[in-house]
Length: 501
Image (cartoon, one colour):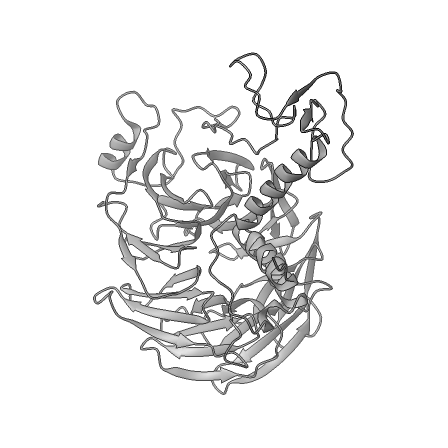
């Protein structure tokens, strides 16, 4: 038996990815030089590291409680992976293999009951002081409102999506998907196999492969970010080894921007589609002019990793990082024009309100905060029990409603004007790492490590549909005309219309 450090590092890397610690996984992969490993790593099953640790813990348990004569010491002290174990009971011995009448003692090994993670049974939690008869002020047709409300006024159980179209082509987990704004039938995806793909749903069996070649033939390159410009004419893709490329909707490579060999964590287009902002693991942000492919400016933005960027308009954008601060920047100005402080841990996501008045942030400290360029902190939303991974605004400039996805398995909807939580969606049993509003703002899709996609009514909070995938859900995106794309760890992409299925 050979135990290689590269194999251990790969299992740790996969555990971080599967657990939703994407930024931590990038840092670990970069510092362990795992991406330079010449040996092709297998596509191991999810949870492999946990299974190895559980088996090792069981062996340690047996070894600790086994006497030389083959008897096992009974022990009621907890046995854990960390810390020195001290037995607390030595009063009884028995031969291994002796049968004990059922019900006379708990199911144990060596007198010690192994501790396993228990799955909580989650139930929907009403928001305090929420009147179920009240409905959020989002316009829907009367027929839909009546159907969602139901005869009893109680929330319905969502129906299962019976049919989904599966897209095959990637050979590693798919992390990202994005619908083209200009062509509603065109979908882009990015995966851990070093490729992005463009799919035309009119001909879904064929896809255009966008390759991001490694420095050598044996190195695998994760696609870390993809983004269409608002005009839907260009697609930008970024990879872990610092490659930044721009493609047309037909998959023609238009530009290869200068590679910095530093992992790119996020990228975003400005409103006109003329500038591209890229966030790097080393704390810097680069602005690229896509008209000539040249770097326009570099900002030394954060003391830690830059975790997200988002444009307010064509010249102003915000960034967040592991240094617990948010900074607002303007083109050609080397100093931030505004700095927001208040989070107590990494800030995973920043998003500008559609009307530009507010900036929302999500943090590992479990809070969602809303900021203003004139008033600084506007709202400090607390309610999640664990890290908040993502926030998105309802796509209406006349409202100030946003949704947050958390590792506590819930999604919360917040109303800035009311300064309160108006909905708690609690159908998932594992961390929620992605969500997307429908283009009309009536529905919300959520995806989780529990392999489920749930579709909710924003109007009354009911669960309309649910889809069970074949693996962990990494991303969900809603097309302008109703279809949902789901990026899966199984290397597949699922597409379905939740309002027709």
